[in-house]
Image (cartoon, rainbow, N blue to C red; front, side, top):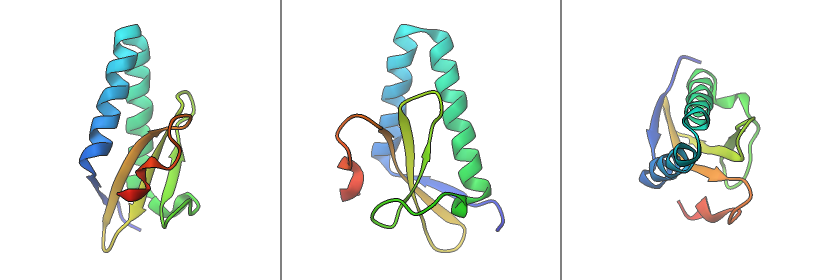
Length: 99
């Protein structure tokens, strides 16, 4: 499968920004590490979105290794992937299901 394009739910963008800000307030190093890992996860999704098993409600999930977040996404038609959430793994499980 060729590299796909990513579309982001506005709430997923806000979640990623909020996490970045939280880490940035504590440590520039943590902020950079979070952003690096998030970007790597997004790139892996672009390259092979079907690599991860089905998760919940027709979605798939990439778990970040060093941070308690997962990227929740749905494969669309053609070469589109919708990023539904950058969800904290310990807070409000499943809140993103309404998206």
